[in-house]
Image 1 (cartoon, rainbow, N blue to C red):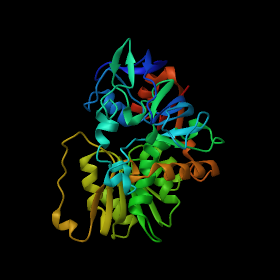
Image 2 (image 1 turned 180 degrees about the vertical axis):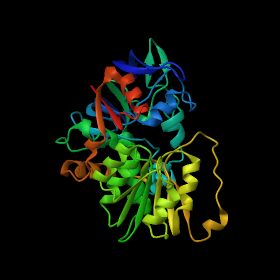
Image 3 (image 1 turned 90 degrees about the vertical axis):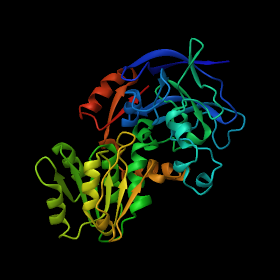
Image 4 (image 1 turned 180 degrees about the horizontal axis):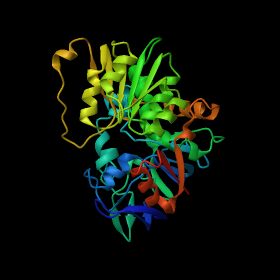
Length: 368
């Protein structure tokens, strides 16, 4: 028997989010029904809603959910009704990367999470008036009062931590934190540069502040965000609306360059500047995603000093261990995620979208 709920449906590329009555399929053996308490709004949601990715529309997006489990399929283990959960991406659990602790690089990641809109077997998880909708977004489609969630998207968390304070951990925050902890791994004396002070970039700043990095440089063109970056742990800031980035970084690093750079803007021009700013043996992590097919020109001889350019998906995190650790840091006040969050009632999703686009909200979180 289907499960009625209310969801924010995108009818076609570029259309607004519209609340509608929909039906969830019965949970399969490895699925759970989750009553949503909060869900973050991410630029990836907006990119898909705009028609920038071939996700099947009409459909239901949302991939930073947090809620309470209501029912589980017969094969689900480790999760029970009443558990508090953060929802993240899903994966097959069977390929080499999944077995190796790198599920963000699952062999079937794209169809399971971003563009398929269906379960792996091709069946739909959401319908409206009997007609299937695009769903199963990141194994969750959490822009709804209830979500049918893949077991591998579920992460059980401490029930004492308010769910609206940790919903963004499932994507944006773990991406920024993972870029620093799982890829750059700063040592004493390191200089880390974060290009872009949005939710992902500021998460990277907070993560770097919990490492032995000596210099943490936040770069943006919005002065208010740079002030916030300083409050969250940046030792230096560069406003690229007022200063030349290359000159500023050369001055900050004494001409040596950066040991690590996190590129979150999705601009290939900024990515190139970041690579040029690396020290010998430095690493740039590509997090920001420009349109498919985008290319960047690099100085090949400039790379011969041991520079590395590394692409990253979702922080290269193993969610079952990584997210609970982040929850503990939030609980202890060591990861002040609340400084990034603005909350909106679910019915005001379009206002949240507008505020995010206008730069008024760093990380909108919809509450139910």
